Length: 165
Image (cartoon, rainbow, N blue to C red; front, side):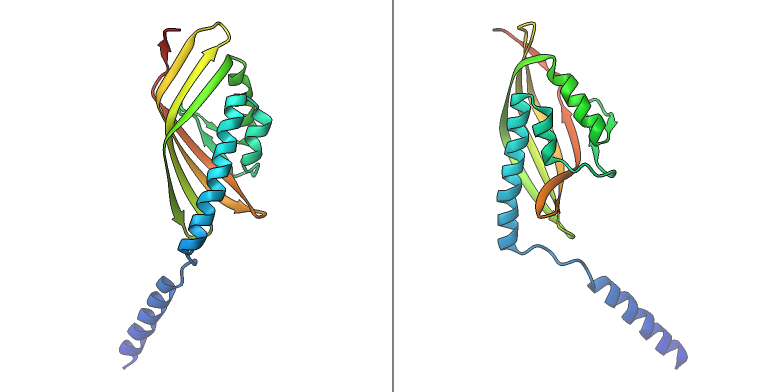
């Protein structure tokens, strides 16, 4: 009898814990989040095209847990990522970004993955033109103080190819 009671209690405990998850975002709230996050992503790419690191990083969380993985495989915290982008911008006179595809995945706990694929066309200050035909970014967004912020980013890209003017 004690064995059956013990097994029943363990089963109830395990089943009960498994059923207690964080509430998922409703389909209606998902559509609202897609729109809000899409606007943040647009601000990110507009800031990149303007080569404005201060405006760019307003969309990112400056928390200690922030991580950005660069296309070269380096890890950067918030300050390192902001500094790295500011230095990178010094190489260019212009930049144009085009979106090919954008997808969203909703995770428990108000976490949203935004996967972006696009192209970059850049002109160096020397006049040389470069293009990246495949550029991918995974943004992890969290709603912080009622604003969607990037808390993690992983970027990957093919090497830039020289273009004829």
